Image 1: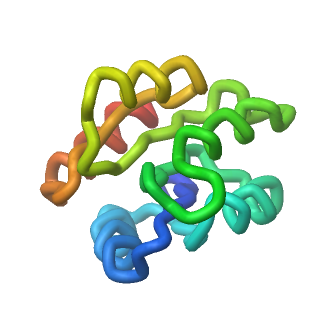
Image 2: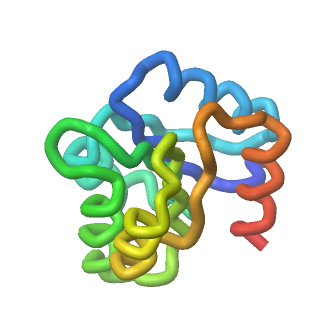
Length: 122
């Protein structure tokens, strides 16, 4: 039985595959999306317990994705983590104001990623 259902959203296939590999190794069930729009179209059918998104993507960015997820019934409290090279205070404050629960710096350490995911899920 999977530990948790996690949606991974990143327009970089390479990074998405690295994150997915780490999370699958930890026993999670993963759904992948290459854009915020694709994630929004799949979120209700997959019903993730956690969303892990890149910040900078074409179309909606990760913070805008978080804001949109918060408007979907049943997803007001779903944890949303942003994976980004940008960890400036202004961006983090914008994220928090739009429903982002946490930040993971890129490049990420697999053990730190797993630790943050476990912490957010419990």
